[in-house]
Length: 248
Image 1 (tube, rainbow, N blue to C red):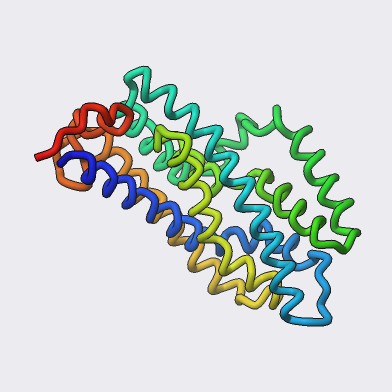
Image 2: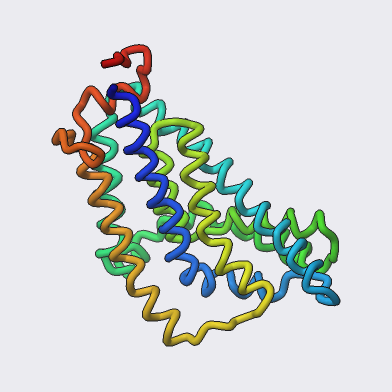
């Protein structure tokens, strides 16, 4: 039966989302760590801190899932337009290019300039919320934190688009966020507990993992007929046309 194979392929892709978040959380510690260190928690009790930290983390997951829905919808439109395999190959190539091209090259083009105003508003709102202690505030801070620009989030967004489905796009982003939770929770509860040297070593491994994911997407799109890795054209089409599924 072809459909279970397609489901298994997507499950493998989802694992990459979680691992990307888990490995990439060392990068998150440098980017979002300062926010986690100053969250307005009730530090009189470890239990209260853990509960309030969870609200912050849930807020991030909700934002990531919503982003996944939006980009999964874009991916679905592209899939229905017949770009299933080309899209997977293109996204794989883009992921690899992003990590091998020096950052200074991207800075010349200043891609994020058009959204600077929106980012400024998010940061301003977060600054206001950091002055207020309440469970609602911590959840809101998590929601806003998920909107801050991050290279690894962009990588996860590529994966959400490549999923070609709203639910799968949301799942991809949700699992990416889930992978970041252990490190971010530790940062909230224990502060900057990792040595900079160790964090730097782990960060050097992140591009390698992104390249591996990019190669997986490329293989998936080439339709080489390799079981579980590079399904044939019909298997990819089946994901959006399950009525064509046939039992053995």
